[in-house]
Every structure is written in structure tokens, then in C-alpha cells.
Length: 401
Ligand SMILES: *[C@@H]1O[C@H](CO)[C@@H](O)[C@H](O)[C@H]1NC(C)=O
Ligand SMILES: *[C@@H]1O[C@H](CO)[C@@H](O)[C@H](O)[C@H]1NC(C)=O
Ligand SMILES: *[C@@H]1O[C@H](CO)[C@@H](O)[C@H](O)[C@H]1NC(C)=O
Image (cartoon, rainbow, N blue to C red):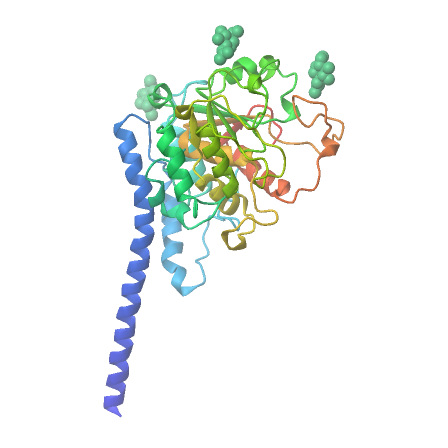
């Protein structure tokens, strides 16, 4: 009888040890994932990219730690700070965290505030971790966060194509001039009709990084949208097809949504003939007037994070599926939260109550033409963008969100 109890206790202890060891292994594996990007960030810091650690106010960090340590037990501690299902703070319109208010107290309007967007993001979304490179570089295969996902959420199965592209482009960063700034303000210019006739052009030009999407034109609309383009992010079906419509100098950035997109970019980079029957859903650009060193691949992590962490689209086993693709606008904002010190947007948002307002700033199609989308979930994206605007993580110049 006594022996039986002893044997039972010994087995129990052994099981407990095993459990602890497994737990530790799991924890370290997770840590290592994070370290990769932190390491690459450190390298960047040496070479001049400005970074401030994104600070989460200490009480929120403490709260999160508490929750995490409780996880194996199941029920989370009830706490004073309330979060929504995705992990966003519920009360977004509270006054600035004392720590952040103090840090930026002496910055006057228009002076770039280092680390501001990521610090604000971390206060409303404690899981946010700033390091995540803008573009794929030659260490892309080591990035745990994207290695296990097929496009659009990762790079699985694309190794050879990406390697071939990067071996020609050889550039994985912004321009040397932009990398040397100690503080970078970025603006994502959406294509919305809300941009029309607001004369925001000169204001948009003042941002160090101006991001445009797909085929949004500049020529003829300079007064409203500015004449500077730092990055043009697009995919084959969205890219400008008429060569003369490209601005003089901008980086051409691929957001790869499907495997054909990487294949397409390889043709473009190597100036080979694009085969039109390659599984695109409409006609695609067959040439892009850019030299290989002006071409980049957007880090697919931003598509993954926007979809699953920020907007809360269906996971669908990590595969593309009905309504789980974020729009390029949300993807670009996600990229900027990680890589810019301040983030602004213009030309975002639709007012469905104004069916006769123009959908885009550059054409006369009306709002009413918007259709139920198979790929996107406009309402959920709007909820996400509203959180960012309300909490002053991003600044919405056209107040359309
Ligand atoms: C802000 O400026 C005031 C007066 O110039 C100075 O006393 C204070 O230390 C500054 N605060 C920060 C956070 O730099
Ligand atoms: C902008 O102004 C032009 C010229 O005045 C006008 O034709 C156009 O309808 C206006 N667009 C919007 C969206 O107000
Ligand atoms: C934008 O317009 C200004 C003023 O007309 C001009 O000086 C500048 O060179 C233009 N920039 C680009 C990139 O076209």
C-alpha cells in the first residue's frame, strides 16, 4: 500500500519534470523566433536606421505577463484593463499615457517624434513588437514568422523564386538617404475620392516617405496628392500598365498575394517575357520601367499580421480563403507601424451613405459601384483603422476613416 503511493508519487514527479522541460523548450523556441528579427534590427541600427524600443507602459506589460503565466491554468485573471477579442484596449480615447506624454512633451507640431507610432500602438495593443523589416532580404529563409505560411501570409514554397529575384536586385532597404534619417514620417496615400479637391499635395510632399498603392496616378493630380512617391506597393494585376504613367523615381515594391506574383516579379526583374496565361485574374503589366536595384519584395509578415492579428480575419489554416485577405492599404499601414516613427494616411475610407461620391480621386466611378468582395472584409478593416485613428496611432488627414 505504502509502496504503491510512493511509486505513484515518483511517477507523478517524473511526469511533472517532463512537463516542465517541454514547457521550457516551447518557450525558448518562441523566444528564438523573436530574436531573429531583433538581431537583424541590431545590425540595422549599426548601419544607421533609427530605432527606439517601442515602449509599452509598465502596468500594461505587467498585466500581460500575468495573463501569460496564467495560461496553462485556463481562466485568465480578471483585470482592470479591458481588451477586445483581438487584444486591443477597449477604451481608446483616454488621455495619453503619462510616460508617452512626458517623452513627447517638448515636440512642437510638425517635428518628427522618434518612435511615436510604435509606442502608441503598443499602448493599445500590448502584443505589438516593432522589429520587422520592410522588405525581404537574403536572410529571408530564417524568418520563422513567415517560413511556415504559403503566400500571401508567408514565403513557403517560394524559396527559389525569391532567391533568384534577390540575387538580381541586391538591395533590401530603403534608399541610403532615407535610411540615414533619425526620424521618419511616412504617409500612406490611399486612392479614395475623399482626396479630391482638398489641395493636400504640398502637405503630403513634406513626409519623408510617401507610399502609393497600385496604379494611383500622380500626374495631373499633384495639387491634391502631391508629386513625391517613395514606394509604390502593388501586385501584378494592380500595377500600372502604361510605362509613361510611372513617376520618375520610386521603389517598385511587390506585395506577393499568390505564387504567380513572385514568378511575375522574376520575369520583370530579369526583363523576360511575362506569360499572360499564368493564372492572373485580369491583364497584368508586362514591363515595369525600373532597374533591379529599384525593386523590392514587401515582407509578407505585414499581410499575415494585418489579417490575423490586427483585423481578425478567418485563419483558414493559414491559407488564402473567403474574406481573409487584407486590402493593400491596411497592409501598407501595418508596414509603416513597424518601420516609421510617425504614420499618417490620406484618401482612406468610404462613406457608403454618399452613393454618388466618387470612389477614387482619379476617376468618376461612384461609390455605389462598390460590390460585395470575396476577398476583403471592408467592415472589419474599418473597425481596425478606426481603432488606430481614435487612439492617435495614425493621423488621418482626410478624416475618411
Ligand atoms: C522640456 O523642456 C523643458 C524646458 O525647456 C525642460 O525643463 C524639460 O526637461 C524638457 N522635458 C523633456 C522630457 O525633455
Ligand atoms: C473637384 O473639382 C472639380 C472642378 O471644380 C469638379 O469637376 C469635381 O467634381 C470635384 N470633385 C469632387 C469629388 O468634389
Ligand atoms: C514636385 O514639384 C515641385 C514644385 O513644382 C518641384 O520642385 C519638384 O521637383 C517636384 N518633385 C518631383 C519628384 O517631381
